[in-house]
Length: 298
Image 1 (cartoon, helix red, strand yellow):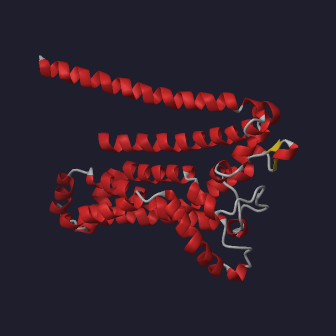
Image 2 (tube, one colour):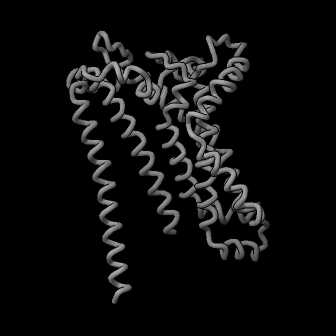
Image 3 (cartoon, one colour):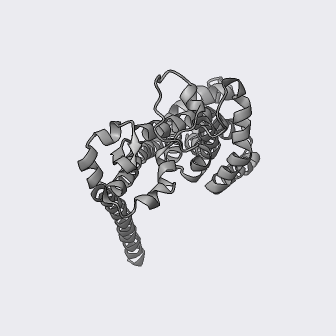
């Protein structure tokens, strides 16, 4: 009887804390919506599609910052996802068990490094390296969208690798044994048995890495250049990617947030950026989490 009561007590406490967490997220979203009402009344949907941001003229267009956010996160994902997935496959399928835990612990330590440390390393080394690499294209400096993307790729790599490893280790070992019994070698078992079964989890790993890339602030702030109104004339041109730009997080992390406080329209615009960022990260994270749960359920 006491064991049943203990389980019921634990279950209801879990439900209670989960409800508190959900209520906090919903309350935060509601607060952002209410605080951003002035800019939605002033700009309407043009707040999302507008190309110019001049707060002294009360002109607020977030499209260049949305572009910068998506471009930086997408480039980071293109660089980090193949390396992270391949590293996860290697540790889960080919690395001996006695080395796997040590390698995974080292990789996970990289995820625990504070963002500001990555940002300082980007300032000290990465932006100079990018500037030297792009000399033939005559860049203004090394603070570019590409610099921010490379730095973000390093930051999200441990997340993708660790989650990919977990997804692959979730495949029952009996499936691997059955594959070897059919005459498949270790590489074929990984390609035709483990990866197909862990595919939802691998996609989830990439999406959760994308979620972190979208929400990263301080490291991007230090190396992106923070140039407003950088809208590409040609989306197929790579030139905008090697120039300074602005992301939603770098805008929110700058001094303009303090300047805006107390002026309803300007403050509403800054909070509106936070709302857009919250929506982007929430959608990506929820999709990734759902795929991850589906992978564990299977």
